[in-house]
Length: 325
Image (cartoon, rainbow, N blue to C red; front, side, top):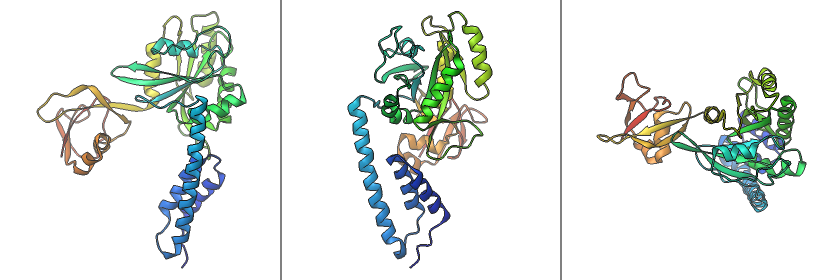
């Protein structure tokens, strides 16, 4: 019996053949499995795909174990994970110390950060994880950091505004590219086989001589491509703007819940992707909520406060939702 495979299968098969990482291969194989018709003609192919998924899953586990053993593995916590990358002495460690309770080693000599160092940054009523990383200049560092960087939600490139900034950004982008991480830019097609990530540029040391001129150059070069923020981690200036830029780059919203007849819980918001619906918010609480949800009442994004809305209603930042099941 012929397999009669659909075009989506062959597209996924191309991605599988081009993939170099086990995680990419697994994703392509799972797509092939999902779109493949199920009948006697595909039984053998179904088994082959399952065996390949098992094989590459084992390979991925071995790679993850290696990353953990080297210390180049950071478990994601909070509302999002932000990797601070950039050249030596750009001030990444000082920035981490300024906005979190982490205590990285800070010195004027290069390469004081040898392994990734995490810290939790408070933004309003949520926590966001920042991770200071070693400079990407050395090939061995890029190899060890690759998976850690690929797991991040946002890459923040930190540059020294007292020095020529464009070359610092370009060197960082090149290092990311060699780890197969490419900037996620609106309107620009994603490159197959890469890991698209949102990129934010942070100009640090804006209190030093020449920083104003270099900031203008940086802004002129990249403002139409990336969000930028100017700070001085040492002096503490621009840090609130930095927090806001990080939150915007994550493209998430905070939504609060309440029970019928009770006050809203404004201390522990749901963290959702922008564009999430009432139904998706319910699922983030528990899958049974989504299955049993009849409707919701919303304060904030409705036409009026306390409006009854459908499961498909798109939520906005700061909404209060009352689920009815």
